[in-house]
Structures are given as structure tokens and as C-alpha cells.
Image (cartoon, rainbow, N blue to C red):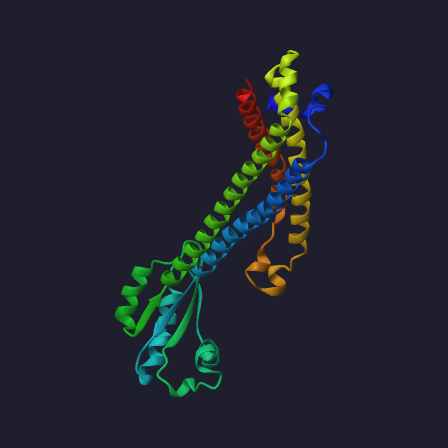
Length: 297
């Protein structure tokens, strides 16, 4: 950090070594801006998938379904027995039997809205809303087996786990993309710095002959490229945050991609992109400069 602070302070005599404009300047600014832009979106995607996993987990963990498959003459009696048992079960906030209209709406996407639910042997569904840590599923199954043998408890485990696993994998994919962006930025800045160093090889040779130390020569290149990368990262970050802020919210459109946004203090996280880009440029350019100076006889 002390080296970075002294670097930002600068040395006017050393700054004149590196040309202020040219292809390497444009390449560094453009690379930093593009990588910062993509980095902000990768960060937003990572946070969005983390929220998605939490939301799916909480939504499915707090609800379950009891399916009652019984003869028509026993269905109502078993339904009443299930509702009575649920009202006495700790961890159950509420329970209710779905109406024919609600069951028809659940089956409509597969069988159409005109499905004659009342004439088909469709099980009666009971919705269960949990509270606190939930209920003892195994104990409930044993009691239902004794008093309502046609009732089957579905705690959504088989649905919840694949959804949460998919969201977690998306989160890992976003973090992997962010890592790849950081490595690409380091590689591109190193390439730009190496090009500038090769173009100024004769200048560095002359400086050595007049007594300039390697750290003095390297510092000029490091400072210039670090400031260029910081400027490009600031531009890319600002554009990415603006694009994300203009995207529709999830409550308006209801889709997953519309939730690609920051919330609360999360809006401060993109500010870390600029110092990260400066840090990457500092070490990448320093490594390239010192390596190039070692190659000069």
C-alpha cells in the first residue's frame, strides 16, 4: 500500500519517460473499461443468484403439501382428519384443503382449463404453511398413516434441492466469470505495458547509462499504466451501474434476469472495481517493467 501511495503521488521527472498518448494508452483504457463493465455485471449476477437460492429455499422450506388419495366415500373424512392433525402439530402455522377451482388451476397448464376435476380420481391436496423450524415430518407421517392412511406428506425436498443446487451453480459460474475477467485484465495490461516498454527500450538504455536506477525507470511506466487502468475502470463501472439501474425490477416484470441488480449497501460493491483494477495494473506493469529491464544488458 505504501508503494501504491507513493506511486499515485508521482514523480514529474519520471513521468516524462512514458509518452502520454498512443496505442498502448488507448488499449489500456479500453481494456480496463471493458473488463470493469463485465465485472460489474458478473458481480450483479453472483449476488442475484445468491438471492435466488435463498428465496427458493425459504419459499419451499416454509411450505409443504399433503396429498390424500382415498376412495370418494372416504376422502372428506380423511381430509377432516388430516386438517385436525395438522392443527395439533407443533410447527404448523396454518393448513387448508385446496378447492376444486384451485386444483383445476394447478393442472390447467398441462390439461387445459376445462379439466373436469370433480369427475376424475384426482387426490385432494392440503396446503401446509410452516412456522419457526417447521414440524417433525417423520412424526407427522407416522400419525397420518395411522389415522388417514391415504395421506402422503410432500415436504418439497425433491423440488427444493435441485432448484437450490442450480442457483448455487449459477453463482459459482458468475464467480468464475469474475475471476476470468480479472485474469484477462491482468494479461491485457501486461501486454500493453510490454509493448510500451519494447518501444522505449532505447530510452531505458540511455537512462541506465546516465545512472538512473531500475526502480526509477519502472515507476514511470507503472504509474502511467495504473492511472490509465483506473480511469478506464471508472468509466466502465459507471456505465455498468447505469445500465443495471435502468433495468426493470423483479416486482415489475417477475423474471429472473430482471432481478439482476444490487440492493441496499450492495450498490457500494461496484466501487471496489476501480481500486481492484488499479491494484492489478500496478503489479502487472511492475512485473513487466522489471522483467524488461533485466533483459537490457
